[in-house]
Image 1 (cartoon, helix red, strand yellow):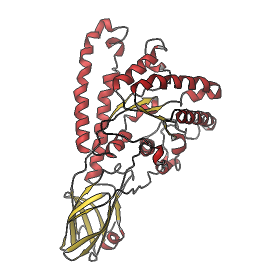
Image 2: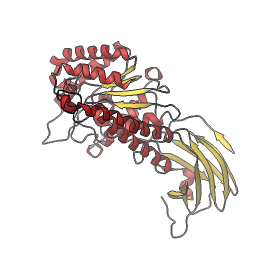
Image 3: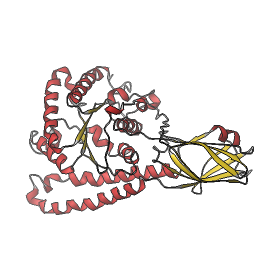
Image 4: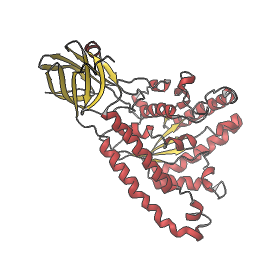
Length: 409
């Protein structure tokens, strides 16, 4: 028996307002098979590679579309590329920035600047915009579709840290200006300043009021992915059991096969249309409801591993869970992405850069031949991600729990 159905979105809150930032279809940027997404910006972009949430969502959101990623974020960088100059004069950083982007071969550029520049207030806005236009003009030759990100809002962490209110007022000016810049060039614009707000001190999105924590990067990933026309889609399946007969009364975002009943339980095979969100993050819970069960407690096993227990009455209403082999698979993809980012980071900006490529290369420049050895390591991680992002059939078995193992949710 096989049941197919159309995609539907079942999104569970991440614990912040970022998950509620829908964009209209005409405002989205459709990703294509073979796209290379390059992230460019300052600290916000650089630190994203250590978490891997955005890359993961963009990978699983198109399971049969091969998309790869390169992170060119550089802490404290600006639109002039000054931080990238390293030991050269600051003006040399712009040429290095442009070279790094070209060598990354982007088809999509996701660019985030402005958080540093906003400290100059309104008086620094014209210079910032002039530099941003120059940067965008210089990158136009790549032919990449461009997405601009706003800076994020500063969080008020209380004393002894300063009140971020005045600086947030400065940031708001730059956020508006970047939005207008994007609109004038017909670029997609993602307003993270508006989207990311903590829902209380216990749901903080930053570690120190400035830099996002894991929750913050998950929230930013959801917002940016939605802007790129992607969103995590949950699974909802409703079954009715009548003795040995089992039927699916409704289902979303999966293919269900081989439904069987007997011994007071049910079994079936299910393949998701796409992988879920992040384990423990509440991004896209799986909801399974099964009516017609005899009273008692039942345990659900997926591929032989117990995932959750609930009473028959609870299964009838519906049980939501965000753990199991598919969620583990997503976390493995994320960890592989972080490992890939580590290799790429040292590929394009080795720690001993002055000795390899800079003013002291006459001493150790011969070691530059070893830098390309990172390439097969990067390719290996990307190949594994490409394999894992495609969902596989899972075996679901729901049987009565033993007296020793019984209990409710």
